[in-house]
Image (cartoon, rainbow, N blue to C red):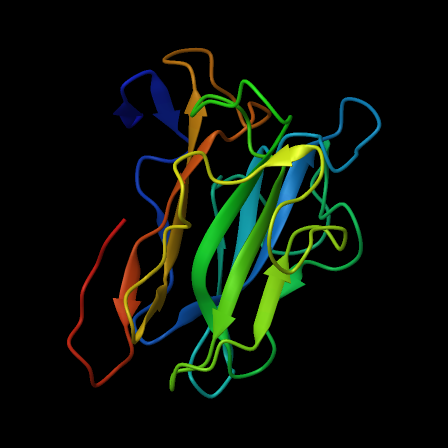
Length: 200
């Protein structure tokens, strides 16, 4: 059953969620291969990897249940440049920022083209930036793109990390896996042994 938010349709009825005790440390974007793929090509679906605090790979999440858990996917191209953006060992995704192509006229309905995400250690060290494209700068603006539409980047509270990603696609009908993602919702959870919480 489709989940709707105003004039959006969620890519899945429920977010694909990491198992308890694991957190997202790597994100790959999948772009519909209808022509030449560039940094401005909209993201259609996402695949992400969850690990525990010891770095054991335990789960692969997907915004589409039809996406394979590894390798290529017919009709789509993976991360534009190089390997999927990953946090170093011992780091997990703390916040996600979407970049939308264009310097003006950007709205919540504008498709997301690239991602930048803050990686952090359980003790709060923010020493790494993950990206879906090697050309994305580590900080600040990116020429030809607009960052998150509403000011500051959404971030999990201290001691919590992203555990799921759900994409929202503009349109209330006719949405497919090739339809670009316009906005993201990402629940978070505290580290094991701390007070658990969830948010968006």
